[in-house]
Image 1 (tube, rainbow, N blue to C red):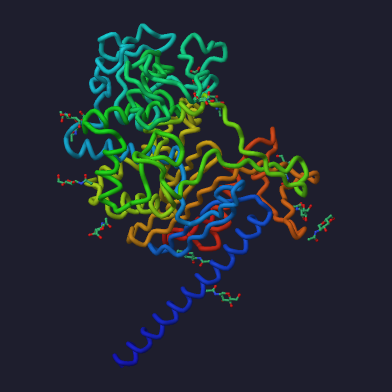
Image 2 (image 1 turned 60 degrees about the vertical axis):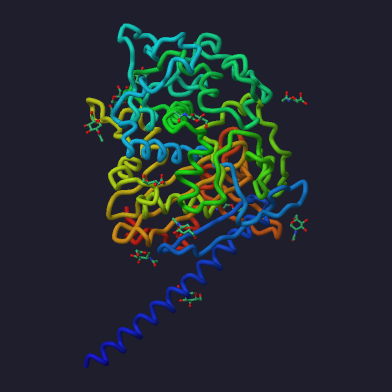
Length: 489
Ligand SMILES: *[C@@H]1O[C@H](CO)[C@@H](O)[C@H](O)[C@H]1NC(C)=O
Ligand SMILES: *[C@@H]1O[C@H](CO)[C@@H](O)[C@H](O)[C@H]1NC(C)=O
Ligand SMILES: *[C@@H]1O[C@H](CO)[C@@H](O)[C@H](O)[C@H]1NC(C)=O
Ligand SMILES: *[C@@H]1O[C@H](CO)[C@@H](O)[C@H](O)[C@H]1NC(C)=O
Ligand SMILES: *[C@@H]1O[C@H](CO)[C@@H](O)[C@H](O)[C@H]1NC(C)=O
Ligand SMILES: *[C@@H]1O[C@H](CO)[C@@H](O)[C@H](O)[C@H]1NC(C)=O
Ligand SMILES: *[C@@H]1O[C@H](CO)[C@@H](O)[C@H](O)[C@H]1NC(C)=O
Ligand SMILES: *[C@@H]1O[C@H](CO)[C@@H](O)[C@H](O)[C@H]1NC(C)=O
Ligand SMILES: *[C@@H]1O[C@H](CO)[C@@H](O)[C@H](O)[C@H]1NC(C)=O
Ligand SMILES: *[C@@H]1O[C@H](CO)[C@@H](O)[C@H](O)[C@H]1NC(C)=O
Ligand SMILES: *[C@@H]1O[C@H](CO)[C@@H](O)[C@H](O)[C@H]1NC(C)=O
Ligand SMILES: *[C@@H]1O[C@H](CO)[C@@H](O)[C@H](O)[C@H]1NC(C)=O
């Protein structure tokens, strides 16, 4: 009896393995077919990586890394991660908290040394809230800075409900007009160019005069996606560790996790200290436009980015570079082996617990928070326990994007699922004349996209929606759920 049942369970296990292998083969074929069609239609170029039950099961590259030089994309190529850098800075802050060097419930004010910020004129940072200065000095906590609820004034007029009548000259240092040759010497007294790789978070904060401006709202009152929050954190990491963010992350994040294809660098594209880093996908990426007719695909030249953006984007908010494998390795470490980063499970919970969107007295969600719904500390959380859930984020910088969705397996985190898509093409797909969203491929067949993948407004970049569509299609092919049953809702 026992022998028979052992044979039966051995056969069942074998069938499960065969079935899993067959499902994987099928999913691989389906994914290849979709991605090759999109590649053929010149809608995509980039790298797609999939983890299923903790195994890295799919990694392919599509299109070109450099169209002009006909350099084909390779799976191991490194991309600028844009805002995916925020989670690295956030982890660094939690590592310092674990060492007892700070407490995330504390205000950050006391960590900003007036001697480092000429604009503070020797006085501690004491921001007032614009319009309600009578409230006095505000003291945003680390948690508020990490969750982008600090009140820090946005760099873009019009963002976060900034009054439309605010003139740039009223509050903003003229960095918007600064070009890529801007020097921070005039502010800090240290010679340097924001793009020679020597700019620290302090230099960026000084150059943009971040600490000299009022807050837009009281800390905790609203959510506002403002990168400079992360340069405040980056400055504190640099200060408390007495090292550059490049060295800190190398020593405490990349090296311990064996991530040799990830690095922090504020300098020119493709560079790292010591010279050119090979295998870095150049920026800006490419903009594809279909000029109103899906059949008449045209690849725009690389978009000439407004030079002012270059200085705007740098630092602890967006200057990590990585390939797909290393970003996946980092997220796996945080979720599965936080001890490898000296993080406790409480720290990981803090890192990945989203802000609470307050309800108004009439029961509606406060619209000043809703854009931030799901945002935790440098990363977003999605889904509910019992349903597919986990962390996700989209980083984009100068036409390159890195987007991922990580489905945590609660029973065994080492069996989590994930999808990562890094891209250097931003398609602007117009809504077809018949009101639906299709793209005609080279063989004259059509690819039906979801409606919102098409640009209904101004036909500029609508890559976020398109990336979401790719992720959703491929996620279904692989049944990525982190082991939870997909919700039927
Ligand atoms: C894989 O595809 C084949 C052919 O379409 C099908 O017969 C088989 O059931 C599929 N396997 C799984 C596990 O879905
Ligand atoms: C951090 O500060 C909070 C609030 O003051 C306190 O409750 C908590 O125990 C502190 N954490 C540590 C590790 O000291
Ligand atoms: C930056 O400076 C270099 C050398 O002086 C010059 O060739 C280049 O055109 C400048 N770039 C911009 C954007 O002003
Ligand atoms: C900080 O680092 C610099 C340069 O590496 C070194 O000269 C200095 O002594 C260090 N300071 C502290 C407090 O460790
Ligand atoms: C973790 O802490 C130990 C002991 O202080 C230290 O040796 C190690 O370098 C730390 N690891 C990281 C990733 O910082
Ligand atoms: C990194 O590589 C070393 C040497 O191969 C190995 O001992 C260590 O376990 C690896 N660490 C991680 C987190 O993979
Ligand atoms: C609730 O109040 C807010 C703010 O006054 C308002 O914008 C929203 O429309 C109200 N919702 C409902 C359902 O009345
Ligand atoms: C959102 O913020 C704006 C600007 O501060 C404010 O006027 C408005 O009352 C806020 N809305 C809610 C629902 O809190
Ligand atoms: C969208 O248009 C394509 C081609 O023009 C057509 O084949 C398809 O049926 C249409 N889909 C919908 C939902 O209208
Ligand atoms: C796509 O969206 C537009 C605008 O919201 C709508 O007019 C159109 O009917 C939609 N098309 C389809 C096929 O759902
Ligand atoms: C696609 O359609 C166009 C216009 O109808 C035609 O000129 C072209 O030859 C077709 N291409 C293929 C591969 O059938
Ligand atoms: C997808 O995975 C979930 C969780 O393991 C499972 O419940 C579901 O049956 C799977 N769906 C398919 C189509 O394989």
